[in-house]
Length: 332
Image 1: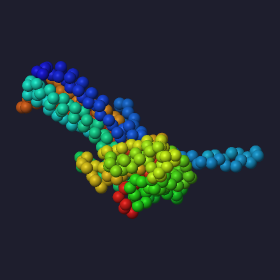
Image 2 (image 1 turned 180 degrees about the vertical axis):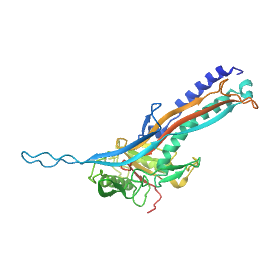
Image 3 (image 1 turned 45 degrees about the horizontal axis):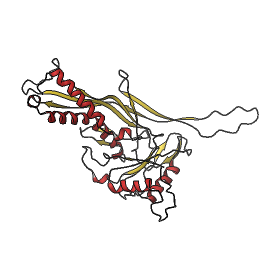
Image 4 (image 1 turned 90 degrees about the vertical axis):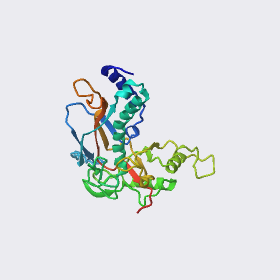
């Protein structure tokens, strides 16, 4: 594999792109986030704002002027981009002593690093959803508050046009069960309001869980059983069959460094892919940065050819109406 730099770089690009294609981006495809690509040279900040109309028309007497519908602006949230990066060195020995498997392994891992960081940062909006901020693996403070300045999962979210509040974290944080799911559904029905405090209908179509086996199996029992799983009657239709898409989020039960955090293993909830106000904007898709004769791609003292991954994105969540959660730890 003793090749020239241009030829080797072509090979590296092929390996990198194939590795990207094989990676399953769970958070990005979950339906929890609205994911969009941002055109170049359009700035690094976006603002998202809630706007509601009141729900009901008013009586109109004969010849009377129709009353104008009320418009209420809700809360706003800014989203700002940031970049992530990682570099590796392909050694002289790898290039000249037939260590092809080492080269493939390094480039494959490199391709995953950019995608995995995006996945981790999106998952941590759920992981740290009961806090208004957290410190990430780089020591940066990440703002996780929604537009009303409270954490994503909260007992008394506010609206702008009314004194009404709404709750989107289940009382006593039970583990997933049929009873707990029905309580969460009841809470979602009673706590879904617009900026005027009027009751609205939100279609919750996602049941999300961590990858905790017990929680996953419980979800599968309820969603896929052909009859009610706690009734010994094969003629009883399971009311949950087809009601939700089950989304397993393996990175939710991790700490800021992506290490296992068993205290979050039982997190679960429901969400609406149609009403979600969680945004993930992609300024720079994960890409391979390659060496060339003009950019000091070869280190003089080591003879390494340096390759890197670069990505740029931003995340923001405007409100908590679209998602309900339980920590599953039985805390009050």
